[in-house]
Amino acid sequence: MTGNRKSMFAEVRQFLATGVATLVAAKRLARTPSPQRWRHVRLGITCALAALVVLLDVIVPPGRYGWDYPVPGWWFTATAAGAVLLTLRRPLWSWRVSALLVALTPLINWLWSDEWLLPWSPGLILATVAVLLIVARNYGQTVLTWVFLFTVAATWPALRGYLPSALMVSAVVGGALVLGNAMRLRRIAEADSAVQQTRAATLEERAVIARELHDVVAHHMSVLALRAGSARYRFADLPPELLGEFDEMQSTAREGLSEMRRLLGVLRNENGELETAPQPRVEEIAELADRLRGAGVEVSLRIEGNVRDVPDGVALSAYRIVQEALSNAVRHAPGSTVDVEISSSPQELRLMVANGAAAEPAPPTDGRAKHGMLGMRERVTALDGAFSAGPDERGGFVVAVTLPLSGNGE
Image (cartoon, rainbow, N blue to C red):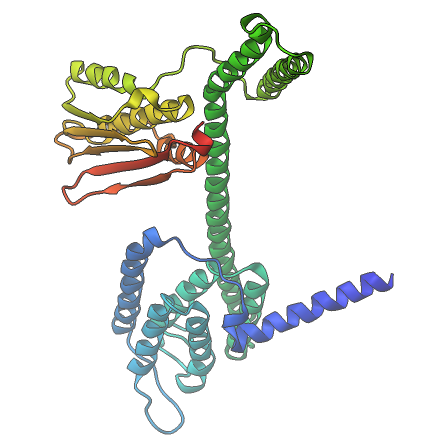
């Protein structure tokens, strides 16, 4: 019981601290970042809203001002438009400015116009609603609760004698905050979904790589088991202790094969089968290029060094990487020339696939997420290599890969 009471008091203290921070210390509050890809759109919409605030106050004639001296109405209009622009960098500060205007305007401008029948200009109302919407898109529910309370408190003195108007204003404030919060939650859900999709695609690509490497590893372990088992027949007069070593090596290799098959059972394809077809190698990239030429794609291929001595695991990954890079070039840059360069040295294998700018319009996509680049990166990472991909100065795209021929590649 005491623990529950302490927890409740801690939550109350946190709630009150958030209220204080909402008023005076916005940097302490967690903010949901907006996606960068829409920053130009946000800039245009915000500037348009600021211009509309000014336009509305120009259309509706100003009211009468008190305090025995005139206060120019454009001061309020300019400040409200500035609050809208301030949302681009400091949403909570823009809310503080607009809330202050909402509280002070009725004290100075006690009737904006006989036709408008509200103590605020239409431009100020639009600016306040826009600011509330943007604040709700950036901050969590606790902050929005305080924003609602403070905003309603700022409007209440001017409307305390007009309950229907006060309720209407409270509903508008709450509606703007609820709508903005819904947009924020949707943005968070979409971001989480994208992360989950990327994670699932990564695991799927790793499963594909593991399935393809299954035959490579199984081949080497099978050869090891066979050679260890046939040693007693290939070499005469072997001492008993050495025969025992060969028998133990053969037994260990067979156990390793059994364990690998058992573990790879979880990596079966959609049909519940493991792929057992011979895996392609680097030298077969020439056949891949020939098939593309037969389909009308202009492909140049240059191979330097002895690629036949490349370890099986590296050879398989190299083929798949070039295959995916060529597929991307054909799909995204139709009509372009594709250059493939492969060079092998005793230490590493280098691959480069470069295509020029598209000469024809790219076909429409089916809307599904593509993970070819992720798959290439996973293959390179598994072999402890280096991967880079990006546009070049010609307006095309270049994929460059370096794979070591030792360590993980063996």
